Image 1: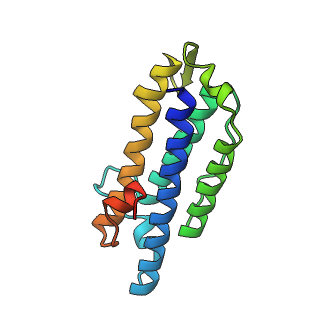
Image 2: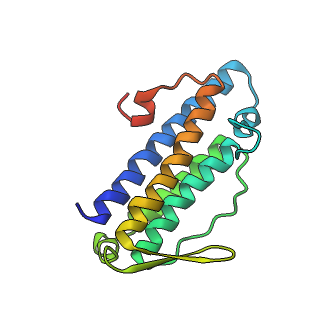
Length: 166
């Protein structure tokens, strides 16, 4: 399987699923007369990021990981979403960027060194290891946490919503 097929279709499917889940949460909030901010600021634990940040990081992880693999610059976003609609727009922008990437760009990174730059250090990966050992686990962590926050707060979503098989 190519790196492209192990990344872009996976991110696309799960971000679309996340969009559906957020739509269900928005409808739930409206139906139950619950302020959206209650869900957007909800966390699983006091030292974890709230829902809004989990969605931002899931989008950023997919976008930045794919950009590094493709050797292109990832578009920047402000991290200022305060509603489900704004999170939906962020997901849509991420999906648009992912759709702009060519399979050959990403597949060319399989054996290439990819450098992840953080505040105080750089980590070097082989392209395949970067995707499989770093990008995908990180993406799924934040996607799953976003799902779990909503489920924990009473939104009627389940495994089929997570998997996109409803």
